[in-house]
Length: 178
Image (cartoon, rainbow, N blue to C red; front, side, top):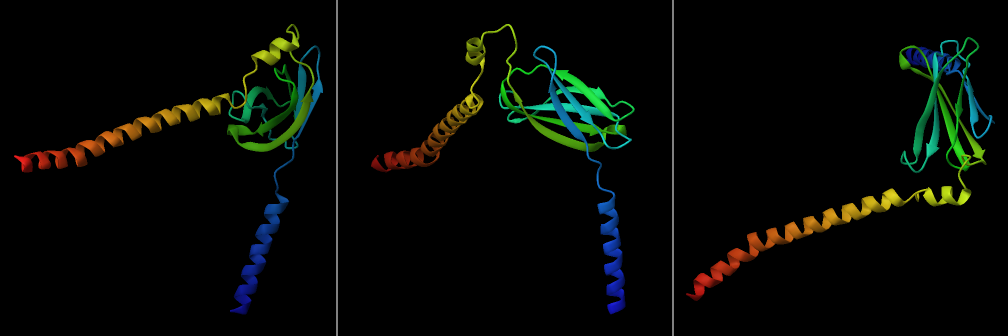
């Protein structure tokens, strides 16, 4: 019994050791200032089977505080993919790249936060600040709609209570008084 347990332990450790040795290759992501207002996003995949890269930027306004796809590029022979992106918001912006292999399988993911310091050219700063929606605008709208739905349901339940419980009692009282 002890020998069997020792053999099982050795097999389990060898399987765990081989899975750690086959860890996913690490990719990298870099962001540099491009020409004009654009940024150059460059990703490098450490695996030879990377075929494409999908780039994302985090947005609170349009994607529900999730990453929103901003572009795709094919990985070249040295494992690099690059896109040019013109940001529409200033401030710290998280970027992400997913490296995909054949059949769309995820090979590596990298994230990086970059401080965007320039708004799109041609617009005065005050106009850009004025046009930006509040982060909480969508959440407030949803809460108002849910409150209206709850009030409608309370009204329906109150009407149901009157019809099912109160009306039979009233009709019974009316018939007893006759």
